[in-house]
Image 1 (cartoon, rainbow, N blue to C red):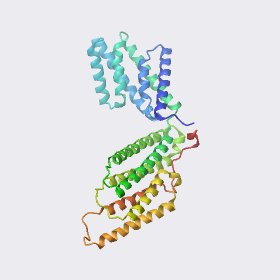
Image 2 (tube, rainbow, N blue to C red):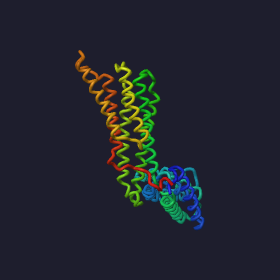
Image 3 (cartoon, one colour):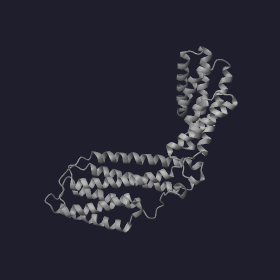
Image 4 (tube, helix red, strand yellow):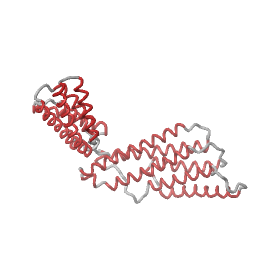
Length: 350
């Protein structure tokens, strides 16, 4: 069964964790508010993160509870107690590198000031108990209810990035070849979005790999995750070269109409490869690459035959074709036939 979407799944799990935490606390006749606060902040994108941060949040909450009890004993329920409990908790947690527990510890310290009026030591241990309940319940819920599975999101993101890159590539070359004076701001903005999507997908791969210690099926997919990382690396390089094309100064290009159409045809074929991975044809790709390469070397011969035999700057035709050949090679590596692709399993499609 396919897991819930990233955000929706966490919302449902948070609600379940809050409900179960409150029920357990009510059963022990303990105030559930502190446990609920802990449960809310402990639902992490991955189970391993919930466990790791839970081990930090427990001692941090204990520190917050201890300071709350200490300052209530000295000053009672007064404004100075709130301030001192919060500041002391933050300072000590920061000093002990308990950064992941700062928020819940400070909230616990401040909230305890309002509800503790007697039996301070007993109240302290109750707070430890409620914190433990919140941590355990939220971790178990995160593990068992819609367990984190980002494989489908990774597949979809890589496909979407590839399609968007193909669209940008085609639009960029159309501008360079036929309308060099068009504002390229939209293409530059789209390229920035491409970078954000790549970073987001890298984060999802990191999340998925973190689950390998808890779920055997994730360990068995390590080769696919490595391939996804490799594909993202190629897409990142592709994004870089697209940016280089967009920053080529507006200059007169000496290509004839036939040469422009020839290049644009090669670009369309390349863009289609990126947009429709299932139709990728290595032989056709190689033929188009050879055509562009021939045009590149023919252009080099013309440059060396001119009077300015060694120009101080590369002409725009040289740069454009160089970038196109580089992108062709990147796409060829992206669709390496012998590689293991990250593809959705049958259960992901259900």
